[in-house]
Image (cartoon, rainbow, N blue to C red):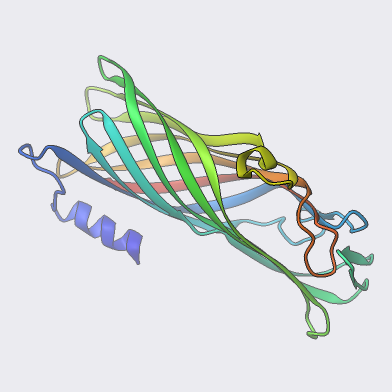
Length: 268
């Protein structure tokens, strides 16, 4: 619904900005497909590694959507986005699957859920502008909302991992505009760090994230509206031993590599 509303506004001639304002508003909406390229997870040092692509039902395409809002003030840009990510499948494994201290027997159907939605706010500052090209560098803060679940279809066995937490990010954005109004853009957000040195605790976990996209756009009528085609890589994860909970010893390994292909609409 939200992407249809934004498209209607753009094609209907509604503009968000005028020349007298000291700031500019930008709204983006993307819709497309997500393809898991590699994805594994393990809970517990004695737990089994699950390959979601080979055994977990992620050898498929999933719907992908992302709304983004930004405000530009001078050479600074403030951005907020929401990224829903909730992949679900039902599989029958040919071997037992141990998740922490719980064992799911082979040949019984299991409902799998991998939810890793997040919210992000960021600030970028233009550090280079030459002709029709610009480069911004900045920082961001991402709030993850993870739910990773394993449930036997008959309901007799269930193990769910939930986690909410902040993730600091570094940001880079490049934009090149051509005479006809077409543009090329590349952006990247990411980090790699030992978690215990960031949170001041004794949680011995290595974490990483990368969220990068290249896109090509062309203007629509009226001025300020455009459409674009984008290819995005989302990757990263974490591994190590944290605070034990439930039947587990606190060990987690969770790494993924996803690609997306989207069509978007932008209003400025």
